[in-house]
Length: 343
Image (cartoon, rainbow, N blue to C red; front, side, top):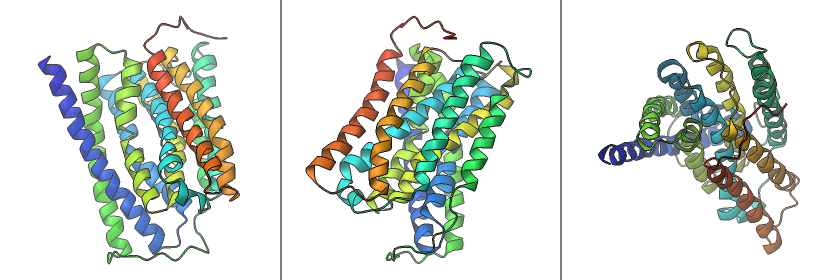
């Protein structure tokens, strides 16, 4: 009992530092957005998304090289992505009035396309290549395609915005000072990420949870805390372009982590091992993307109005996405007898 209590307390302390660092990082991204001509899609979708995904990167490295448990990695990445989609519940429910009067960049529609392609790629990697042993040693060839899709997503992201809304900038920090502080808190986030991995292994061992479930719950949620706190902070500042870019960009960046972890998994076998929990995470994400797309189209084309009808629609979509994550948590602890190559 003592070990169980201490593992949870330590986990919460580390998570608290992650939250604080994430708030500071989103503040600096918002300042860069206001002080430069860099696009919100670039700052949120690539810069902030990459930094807030550093916990997933370093927990995955720790899981493959040190703990040698690949099941943590797949559960961590897919669980983080589904949790990230749940974050749209925040602007949809708590910041809807501000969202309804804003216009988001069309780049987010492309991000949706790339996320869909990446999920197809991971599904093929797990259910076709892995089950049929179409591997190069331990390495899955589909990891190369994942890298190519990510590179294409970067090329298609606009780097600057010619016209930006004039926002009052209260900070007296220079762009260089903001960049330095951004790096400092990014390094702090890395350190906490490594600690989270070991504490997740401690919690899973202490409580006797399944490894994929434990990775999706404790690693997936903890490593998504940066996206959660930065999304809240950016929505509060009415910077929805950066907030959307952060959520969707993080989902895209997470797949690069899978490819990188695949290279490092030579000590613990193939990475894309699909079990019941992985399958449920993929199904949940597909549902989340399907219900999210119409609201993104409405927001992009500025057809959303701050009326009760639209408020209910957006709230319902947020509830469905959150419900898909809750359904995963419940069903993962029930034996559905998916044992398991579906084709």
